[in-house]
Amino acid sequence: RFLNSETLLIVSMGLCLGMAVFSVACGVSLALGAFVMGSILAGTSFAERIERITVPVKDLFGSVFFISVGMMVNPTIIADYWMPIFILSGVVIVGMIFFGTFGMLLTGQSLRVAIESGFSLTQIGEFAFIIASLGMGLGVLDAQIYPIVVAVSVVTTFTTPYFIRMAPPAARWVESHLPQKLHFLIDRYSESATAEQSVVKELWRSLLKRYLWRVVLYSMVLIAMCIITQRYLIPFALGVFPNWGRLLGTVVALFLMTPFLMALTYPASKNTERKRLRECNAKFDVPLIIMTVVRLLIAMMIIVYLLSSVYSMAVGWTLGVLLFIALLMSYSKTVKARLSKIETRFIDNLNERELRRSGAKNSLVPNMHLAYMTVGYDCPFVGEQLKNSGLRSRYGVSVSSIQRGNNMIMVPAAEARVFPGDILGVIGSDEEIQALLPVVEADNDTEAPPAVDNVRLTSVRLREDSPMVGKTVVTSRLRETYEALLVAVQRSDCYIQADAVTVFAPGDVLWMVCDVDRVKDI
Image (cartoon, rainbow, N blue to C red; front, side):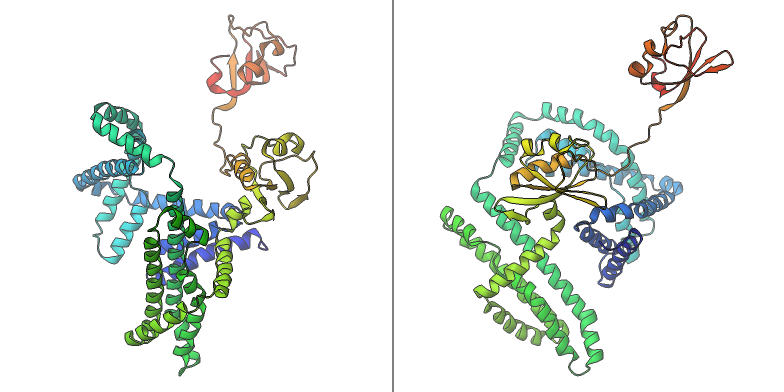
């Protein structure tokens, strides 16, 4: 928040390029590192500001990328390899229609929605170029494959709009020719898949989601710490302490990894959830035990991997198992409470932007939260005074502040107006804030509106039978009826600045600013 736009742009691009270089050093894709850093920056509270200042850079490099891709389309290669290009294009189109439709049916969508979704996926995008470039760089793809991939992408991109247009007729044809029994099974499966789940299923879904999120998140953090230890920490420690550097680096790494190892091994379920599951199902312990064993094995394998990479396999397994047993012995209420607070803060930092927007973690009193939401251009009370906005009477919330650029209006008066881009500090319950968010942030899009090409200065010559002849500027109702602005009236070689009582005569040329498509109506 203390950086100006130029410095923030340099820092953001530096972080992006730095993560890309770091990902290559770790042996993974260059694009993956840039994507990861973009995801990290997108989760901050200042994502909109970063996005606004980096859009010109994105547009510049995007243009260069697509122009370079277009220059790689070699007509000679297309003519020489028209058969593979034709076959691959057909495989992409047919395969995407089939697998897209089948996948949507499995998720419980209706037959019409599934077919229309499958028909809209009949192309390969620019990411295929990245995969093809990586394949050529690794020597697993022939250099001739790349222009073929580009040609297939161009062909399928041009055909996709036609397949999207064909989707509704194709859906109607399939529905009319599909056997009744199969039609009944699809509809029944769709209804059952989209029906409201029971309380137990919802509880299991929430528990599994939290479990997977914890395992993936902390495993990634721990693996990254292992890689940093191998590549940087151990060599640095050996350079400073040749005799004790390996041991010192390992101890420091394990010390830093301990909070994440404990968070990974502790249960993802709460006492109330286990009690609820015990009431509903006596065998609920089996999946929970399996989930616990998997987490413990992952934690132990990470410890063994780190120690084995630093020392040897025997030392790694011996010390790894001993350290893991010591880790299990730390299951005390005090340690659990402390680690729970650390984990909560860690997750809250990751979700800072969404929490600030919804006010979920900003409780003033029980069930009353302070949220900050940005006013969109389609918000229904844009330009209205607060007393006329209906925020209190209709939504039950109160506005505590309005941030407009660098100006902060604390406890705004009832006469204060709301404008697009304002950040409203809103106090209300969870239900009230969630109901208000889509209303306030309606069409919160910073893209520039499309240019108006048809509105320009044009002229109309009045014939004898024109309905405008004999009328004045007022009675002709050019502005109200035709949305036209009269600039001047050309009579012979003279230009008249028409006033309200000027009468139009045959042969007059009306110079107006209007939509040229409506000139024929005039």
